[in-house]
Amino acid sequence: MKTIFAGVSALALVVTSSALGPAVVPAAQAQSLPATYTVEFALGSAALDATAEATVAEAAAAFLAGGSPRIDLVGHADTTGSSAFNLQLSEERALSVRDALVAEGVPADAVTLEAVGDTQLIVPTPPGVAEQANRVVVAEVTAPEEPEPAPMAEVEEEVSRLLPAITFGIGPFFAHDTESDGNWVGGNLTGNYFLTDSISVGGEQAAFYTFGQNSGYSEGVGGRSVASVDYHLGRGSAGFLSRFTPYVGANVGGVYGRGLKDSFVYGPEIGFRVWGVDAKVAYDIRDSGLDESIIAATLGWKFGF
Image (cartoon, rainbow, N blue to C red):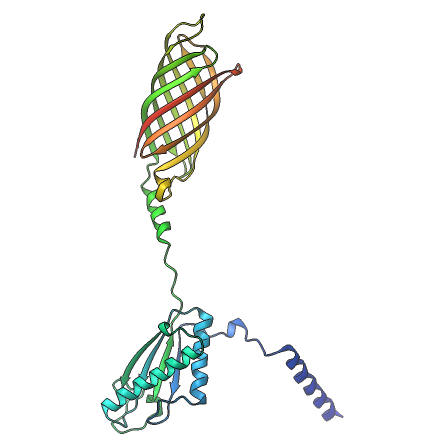
């Protein structure tokens, strides 16, 4: 009865295995790279027998599974023939292995060949010794090379490193005051500190002369002092955006002087930088409301360190 039970169990195991298909080799058992395979040949022959073909198939499988860049083949011979004959024979053996690898799916340009004849014996022997260990082709499957950093990433890193963290600027200032319907013309100083490649904090100081106001407003000298936070698109990048950098942000501060209404202001701003020139437009909202806003524009040359 025990014999019958054992036979039935074995048959069930065979049927189950057949239904599930061939066993899958766990990833942990896969050949790690680099790996070396030795393909053996018969005396005086460059033909692959069944055992040699199986070894070649293993090397090809390791190459294809590992994403290896190449397989290096070195053909050897024992000392039973002349040096010239052994060199020729070792080359033919390497070519046989190369052709078999290509048949297994390895790209021909991924295989390198070298024939050394009897000059690099695996097992040192005197002349005329038929040593099986020396009648081989050694196939080394190299490990995948680590990818090099993308050139653009290196350039962007260098551009980011060279960009100044602190910038200053000087240039003309123009604004239109909707409350007085007047215009302001003068100069503007700016300073910015970059917290990151994209975010900066800064300040502006403008001095200007007011003119063209409605009746009830006089001409005179005024000032605008604001602090800002801006987000810069593309700063630190290579290519076009390293030269043209748009940005958006917000400012808060005050305006004051003769011929205008002194007031607290706040609002959005938008601008861009190109080749060191900074152009910006801000919409200053007075604390008295939107109907008494200021449209301010600046143009400045930036320098930094």
